[in-house]
Length: 420
Image (cartoon, rainbow, N blue to C red; front, side):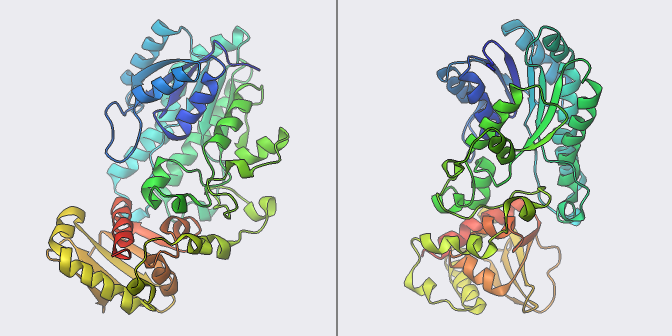
């Protein structure tokens, strides 16, 4: 059951789930190849291939940091050559690297489409294609030969495509490699499986969306649940399966799942792509999820607390723009439209044309950078800090069309507004 002496090649392992799995393997004494693009510190995301390597070795393993672009075959082959020189044969491949943009068709240009499909679907296929001969040799030697993807169970339900078709195509592309290769290489002794979380996992991507605070992490689980589930898969002979982390751990006798909660007792936020969620795990308490932030509202001024309606929200926004409009336009450089689906009213914020402006719309904006669609009462709650944007988005209470990065920038600005 040990991975001691095995060599594990993990794409996207400089942070998040990939790094967490690498650390778990390292505790067995495994060799871990950290294949990622981050060699220099990112201004917003922690971790590089070198800092991850230090953590792997501190955990008891041996590490090889490799600067790899999995879209480029020569880059992947170069990393494999370096692995052979350092450790010898690759035993396990973990296709973890992924690009994400939860945008609709009209907001997802071909550059973004190509990026997601090149990293997710093509990158998984490429790494598997290049390293499968090594995995076959490993199986023949009686070792744990495995290809695993961090990708969802295959499902052709409209709900998983309609809000982000391009991303879903790319992500399910990873799962299709698992399905095909599990059958193709079963007789060779190579196991192929996919692992996916039941709930949102608190990673760097989630921190960028929701803000790096305990409140933003409420409803998420830590990466520990994924690393433990991955370890059970990698030390087994199961193949051709699409596995949910919690389901596997329950199968292994785990009963205390509270230890994985970022915020104990907070209602869990379901992840995407999990079919029949309520039948398997019970009803989703959306009211509790959407209301959990009320317990931890910090720093709100008395003026913000008294805001009762959307007109008050935009008056507060207008005051901020009047004071800092030039700087905001220079920094954010975006236009926003807010459509209230219950009252059928629309509002805007222009942070592109200095000194900026905001207010009610009589007609749609011409090509806003980002559009938000939600109920008016939820929008007011979000501005006042009583509803987390991450929670609203993950539970479907808020839809975002357009540039997701600009949406994140606005969320952070609104958080600052209601503390002034």
